[in-house]
Image (cartoon, rainbow, N blue to C red; front, side):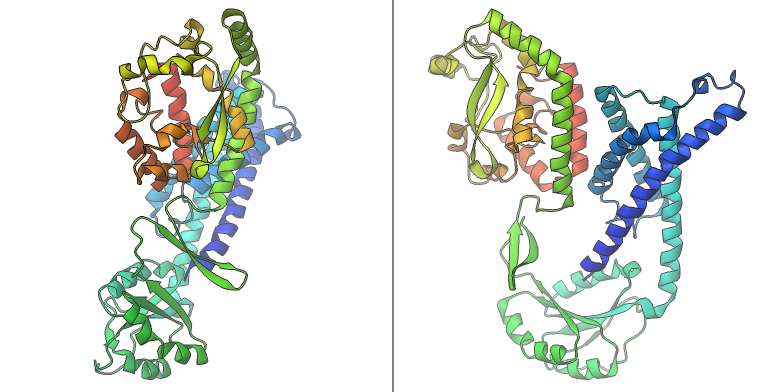
Length: 486
């Protein structure tokens, strides 16, 4: 019921926040110039260098905007904006500037952009201040909004059991959005209630009667919407005679259908032309956040490929000189929903390693269908270095560019491994596989197979752009510390 209104507010907030973010860079630039002019050089040696013209920092702004947009999307800024306290807003903004500063610094390092560090620090402070002032202004506006009773939308709930109370409690959480719970109606037709006047803002909305009271309630009270809560198919039959009544009076109707058998699936409503479709999905559904994930994959993989190109050329030359066989190892793996993909890696094993796997399979140190061995005799000396440093996985960035893989996601399994999955474990194939994942940053081969599968499912159930960014940052630390690699 608040989806359309929330989308409008969200789009407006995105625009305002990005506008303020770009303004923060301009404000930081002129503040840096001002401090350079008025403060003694002995006080601020870090301000000694002159700035380039403002137009020189257009590239910096183009780098800042997607990073801030991705973080704002992943941190659910606008889902909690209305209900979050000022202290909570301060924490969220502090996290935004912290993660934003880290990612911006990392991107500047990779791109080797020469930018004044004081300017970046002043930008982070200016951005924090402007976004915080914006949210204080929004809190004041919402307070004034709540004082006007004409802004409230009156909602009646029709339900046959406690599910109605549960929905009612959720509606009361959105009073700041202008939603007002008028009361409850049961699915019984013989319940009577004393009077039918609806209080303006009751702390405990009353039960106003049974279905037979709805015509009288609609005639004597202002009702904007009716929410029907169906706990079984019999409830739908009881609602049939009420639907035409609401249609003739132009009252919006909404249906909460709790009798569907889904347990962990998320339900969404859409249309195929004029045909309504109810969708159940356990994987992250299509949303702007998934578009941002793909843009992040493309941007970072291009940057990483460009930065690692010299290293990859050196590795290719060393492999050619020290081992026989192809430089790039190609292997068929299972991608999204089991689609076959060709995964690319620098070859770390001797040529023909797969042909002799049966000779050492009894030495497997990993439970489940995955083969892992700490001292695998098939690994070449150079290959051990490549594996420990994860350099052998750099060619997978090409998979990311192709769209076969993502930077973050469950590791792409072999077809023979998938054939031994349990039914629930196959759910890890419902998202695009990645180069790194929770398993990769949580001990890697030190974790048993079942826990690995549970980690992948937790990632799917709790996915967000912020989680991806955290995993990427942890991956850097894991590689540097050589934790769990074989």
